[in-house]
Image (cartoon, rainbow over all chains, first blue to last red):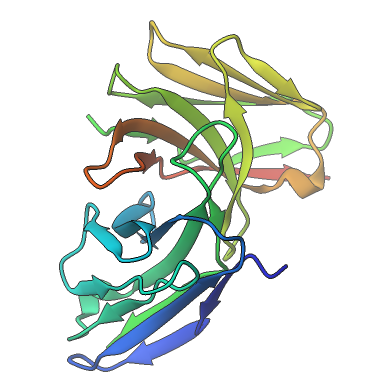
Length: 115
Length: 114
């Protein structure tokens, strides 16, 4: 049981390039989330999905797009990379809306540098 | 005022010591509270939920004080392996599309030393 798998682990982009951060979970969780974590800051929600075909913006969605064509996959797309998008990105999933018995399961993270 | 505030630390304690962290939150309507642990350059992992009556899991005790709007984490008999950053997480409101908004604190760094 792999849990939440993110790829790649590391990536360096030039300004203006695009890329897709992959996220897959094998736990049949309905809820999936993308967060970014900057030094000295709490995790910020970028986008989330409550099920296949449904996505919504979080707190910091500008510069990103997502899709959820299947329950398992929730890729995050950066169209025109900017230095402000240098961060560590975490994908997470949960079977239900966050509750005491429904913790977030995080992937290992993707460290992205935009120069 | 930040939605969730934590002392960043670091808290440097000797092995075997008892250490406590507090976390304050600004939204009095917050419903659920959690402590997550994050090791250096790793993903956060749930340590424990925080229940209204307080709860204990081995050496870890979590408390909630709704009147003063803070939660606490007490670690007894600290181990070297407890060295990590502890994130306070508050579930304060529903997201428009479903699910709940979690607000993460910036974390408190703990270093347990020999």
